[in-house]
Length: 369
Ligand code: SF4
Image 1 (cartoon, rainbow, N blue to C red):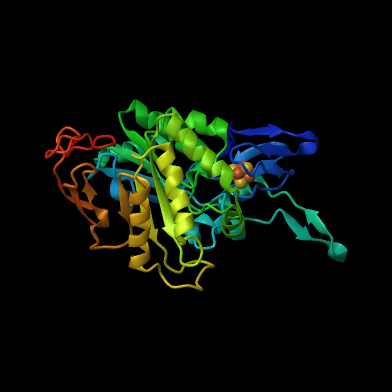
Image 2 (image 1 turned 180 degrees about the vertical axis):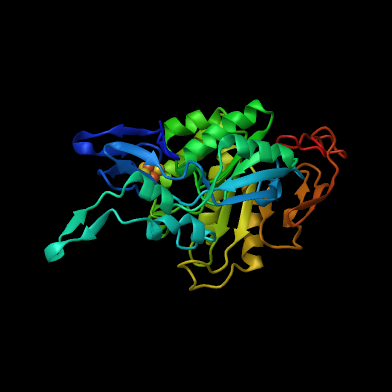
């Protein structure tokens, strides 16, 4: 259903008393009439759940695919990258918090303090909610047309958590696929099984953040549960979506040898060909109490990943480090020479190492492939 520019949400169930159960992500929010879910961009109005961000795009950029990061998915290509405001997590170190957390503090309140300190529900009208959400009014067809016109080969749903703009992402991805484009997600992996399975039918690649291997840290720092994220990583992989994993290494939080090894072992047990990106934390949002990750820590993490058996381990946010390059996991030959997000040379031939003939994992790995 389309009301103004507000769309009804695809994944929810009505509950008694005008409440709804949102089934899009594992928060499983029960939302009263006039309320919003934990992501703040799904709104129950008169017993129906609406997405507030269907056509409210706050970022449209052309990015190298390496920026996602996806290093084994059409290296050297460009992705038309979009996002809306909102996120279903609250990571205190979020680097994009100005857009990801925006709705939580800026959208009209759903309750207010009434007489004698009692909280009373108020139900902003749909139009009022719609007006309050920032973004350019952009429909899926416009996104696909722009991607094609700018020479991108894929559309990337990124910057904030694309799960919370699921309807826009899915409709765009269907159309993109019909028009010969690829689709990729950059995600926190906090999505429920049914939408994940539907999405996987049109998704070619995904980079998922695996920030922790400690349930307690995940709850305290990101206000989420770890197990559903691990489950989603496994399911995307099983369903054949090309998967890469990123870990933001944060001093004093997840940088112990033990936790890094556990993350690496989890990825490797799923598939040693899954690229692991280690990325450098720097102070942001509500976590400003520690220094940026030392490069020596990232190097140590990379050694742990390699020792565990992962074929491809990369260091992100560290310009000038050889951690950007792709090497043959059999003969160690340099195959893709990168500087930051840009591919300088790609020696792969038909997806194989030109020196020893080993097939290098990924999709469209050869230059121009
Ligand atoms: S997407 Fe997740 S956080 Fe948002 S309303 Fe639904 S269950 Fe809650």
